[in-house]
Length: 152
Image (cartoon, rainbow, N blue to C red):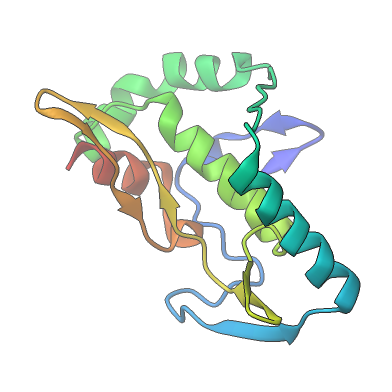
């Protein structure tokens, strides 16, 4: 899919199948260590009492822009939706969450809950206002699937 830092066109139609069992929506629980438990409690306390800073990172979008320019019309004919940057962001975030499953986990009491799936909420502007649909099982969605969900 991504070779030597370059985006290939096959990523448009390929679901991310790696170690995730598609459609299973399984979770596993792992006991949390004392150090991690203390760190999590203090982080949550800090979130509740202090202003949090959001950071932004820049990235080179020229490969996605080129892909959109080259394949946009064919993509629109095939899927009935435009190829936007949103599907690339969702796909990239999904790949990251699959590579680092701890980020996709959640602390539940004294356990860490790991998910074998990726769900993602995406803010979408509509004429009626902003809505936030949840994309379920993003690891199994192609760019076309993601764009269709955002359109609907």
